[in-house]
Image 1 (tube, helix red, strand yellow):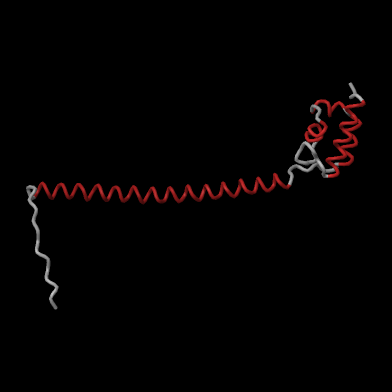
Image 2 (cartoon, rainbow, N blue to C red; image 1 turned 180 degrees about the horizontal axis):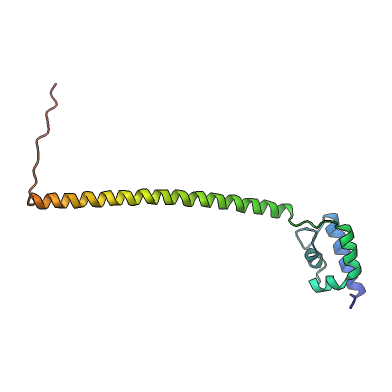
Length: 133
């Protein structure tokens, strides 16, 4: 079932705006989905407009898969993921050091308790050596 004359006009105007790089309702990527959005019609309607699609395919020899904004967004996401991996590696390293320090502290505490028990809880203070030269 072909599209109405009004719909065909909408699609042609939308195609002209997209090809001129002057979109009003999309990001400007040369895709059939954007053609539908730019014309404010359904994706199914675009596919029923066979003449329009043939023109589109002739004018858009190689569809642009990503707009410059999408490329920049994807690069930013990749950079942020790399930074996150590095931060997680640092957290893992610091956590390992923290765990080691906690084990040393626990051992020192246990030794202190054992020494206190051995000495009967008495504290022995030794005189500090004099600093005479």
